[in-house]
Image: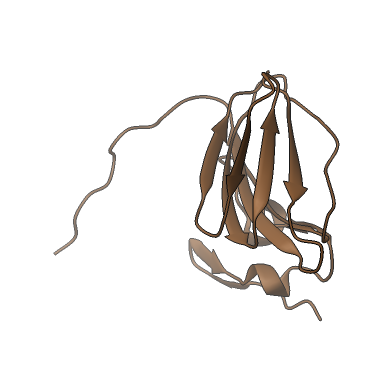
Length: 126
């Protein structure tokens, strides 16, 4: 059962497990009010391979949250990443993902954006 994010003045919190059930996309951007980049969590069923895709502009960063996922890139290379594994993929690079397990779901978190790095703009508070 989905639970709504908790929101305050300038912040929001949730669990990816509360943003949906079963395989597929767990939309993160809209429920949490993210406006600076795209972001989703995705649950992949056992043995499932996603369709190949690429983007016009957005670079993506993937973080494996659960399971083991094989990334296949347009140059024919594959990399298998487990929990905590990260992959950066440029927009025009073809990619597809495969859950290597025949019995357990895998989950990854994906952040995509276009526009560049902001730099260090944090300020310490006393």
